[in-house]
Image (cartoon, rainbow, N blue to C red; front, side, top):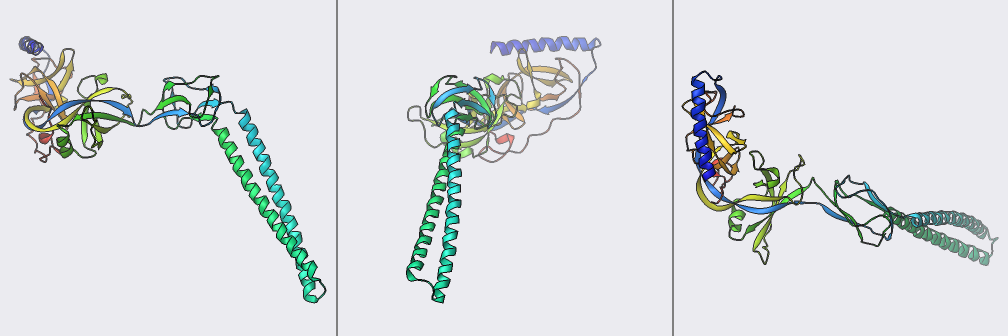
Length: 400
């Protein structure tokens, strides 16, 4: 409170000094646009803690055992999908593939031989059957020819089965060889290395851990007393405002995500309900593990002061807005509470509903500077539905 009062006193002094300077022939007026300070009835919000998590985390492990001879990444390295992360000694696996290929080739040649033998016996049978129709062939000769055909067919079927077995062995050998190389399953970053070159690894032993930095989500936990309000006022894909200390607290640093799921089961010890929120990390600012505060509705309504987001300026002393006072600019300290579309709910010891605040032209402004107003403030917008969705006047507000 003392800091706010000190800032207000300082702003007043600067305004007086600047007004005097202007009267003595200061710089020309600043061209600005303005907007109106409003008092709105909003659903209260309260902050709940959470963290950023990766929606894809993979502990890359081996499917075969062997000696680790290559490890091409280190902790912190960026990897692409399909990139070879590590390799095991594959000499035996290559020999097994070559052997399986030879067995397949042998089975194929045996099938060709059996086919030739069958074709010959079929021709012999045809000649004997022709002689039998002419009365020149014995019964025993015909029976022997038919038996031989059946035998050749059985041998051909056996050779075909052996080929199928050999092809299966070859496919298995090739898979064993491929499994000697461990590839990245998706684009991401290595966060942990669990093995080193020269180490013997068994089936299922972890090599590295990779996380995706593109597919992220926020996980928050809400108290059971506000679960009904959140479940009633929010639906899937509704926006949630989050603030991450790692990104700073300036205007424009809010992160908005969409609700993926409100899990219906609370933790048995904490009685907190998990909520999953999808977040966009196109600008690559977010990292898994970052803490956050998310603003969630409580179902209780209250009166709050709101201003346009563009009116808030960040200074070395904190966030302020410039408001119009007798045709010149004056400064007012503000504390952000939560975003409402393109507006911000705030606390301020100086701003009241109906006052005009500067929304453009305030980047290099100073208290007491004459203003050339290019637009007049807009009136309040219509409220949204009763659940606090759809319009600034109905957005949820922070719990005091």
